[in-house]
Image (cartoon, rainbow, N blue to C red; front, side, top):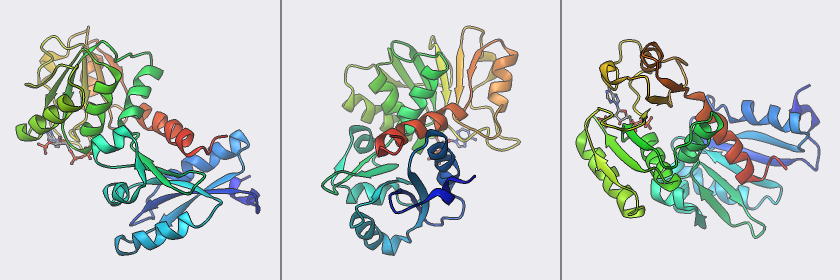
Length: 268
Ligand code: ATR
């Protein structure tokens, strides 16, 4: 039976805010979890056009049974600016992907992209603390992951990006926030790093180039992806063929769901 059939007056309501809205997946993910865990909660899509965002948020804030929401495109930045409090990763990344209302109905936001990646690695037995990492990519996802890796205490972080200036900007921002972590910009070569993480979008589409030359994929390397579809990207195929350990992209999202659910307080 669908969890949505059990909605009563006591059901706590959560949302996912986006525009457009039809593609959002959070309700499909969270509602079965509420049902499995016996939680009296529902997650609904909240369609908020950008020019109505503040009105929508004011309405949600005014509803005592509305617990919070996941945030997706295009509102991650705008909603950060409207929060009463933002957690450290949200502030560093400059965007929030989850917001909860506290008892005083204050809006508390944070970003779980990077923490989801790190937790996904740990769940698969791949500790990042104390390890040296080459991160490929300095886009939106790469930004969140770089701060989370520094926060987890990697021994060294090397960032490579096709557009070098973006890698330089990100490395400087991570260094400023985590001065104790050695962060540098480098080539797409492991150069002694134990872990290579692909945060670029290269691998999403047939015919995309490999983000790192496969001659560098040696058996002692751990190669991690954040691309979920295809599950086995060309990079992971090459890595497996070369005897590397691999981390699939889906674990980042799985763990983000756990972390966001905990943050929203909707799994209690
Ligand atoms: P997301 O939000 O998914 O991270 P993004 O912010 O557009 O998306 O970032 C995409 C990342 O993939 C960037 O690091 C981009 O490199 P550039 O900054 O040089 O554009 C990287 N990327 C995309 N296609 C690539 C390719 N074919 N080879 C290498 N890097 C690529």
